[in-house]
Length: 100
Ligand SMILES: [Zn+2]
Ligand SMILES: [Zn+2]
Image 1 (tube, protein in one colour):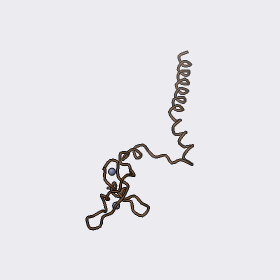
Image 2 (tube, helix red, strand yellow):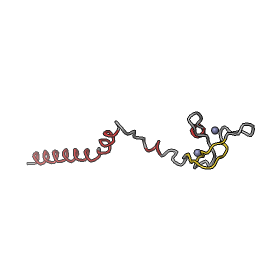
Image 3 (tube, helix red, strand yellow):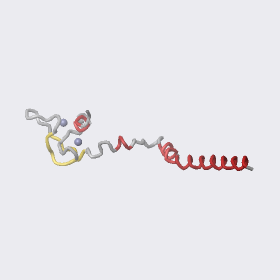
């Protein structure tokens, strides 16, 4: 009797374990189905510098490349640093200024 009970308990434990494993994996299953057409950005990377956003506003001098001798004007600025930064195809001071 004792042996059969133990076996039953073991089986239940295994079944519960399987169900538990199933419940813990829908996220990976769900994201893996999307990877073919959607890039998943890890949250620690995605929200790492979320406060530094390029904001289009009034024309101001770039904080990185503009000098008194050669002023560079841009309409892009960082919402966090509150400074103007070039943001064009050829020139990306916004990216450069936030790279260590
Ligand atoms: Zn910034
Ligand atoms: Zn610049």
